[in-house]
Length: 164
Image (cartoon, rainbow, N blue to C red; front, top):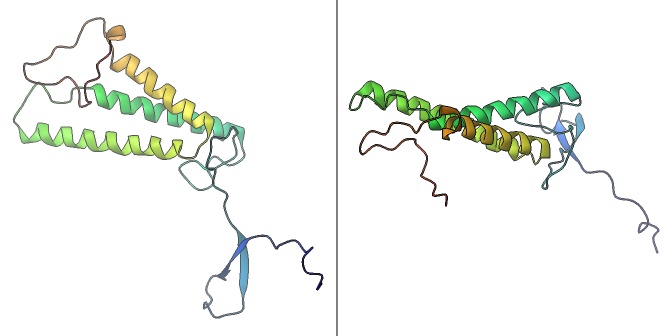
């Protein structure tokens, strides 16, 4: 035997050229690869939406959870609010509806990307934000009366859900 079978393998790193150097230069440094979770985990250490955010500070993690909650809440607000539906046929109304739809879609994608961090707290904050937003804006619990529906016009941009 050559004695090489019992040696541990070296840690996995990537080699990149030093800033300002040519790829062929011998001035190289090693960077550890980021670990990405592929299953739900519980904890405040990870990256959510932006590099290095929230970091290791528990206060920043709480801020991330509040931020995700409010993003989901705002998505529900924009989903159930009638912007310009009382007046029809004008270009201005169409532009307002398009802008609101674009903002709603962008915020919904941000919530989705945050949930894709597989952080259990972020997932629960997003679900809670959507739930409270739907309770406030999508049900009659807060409004006390059914919304007025103009003949032939739907009440929101969402697909209707049938609940028995």
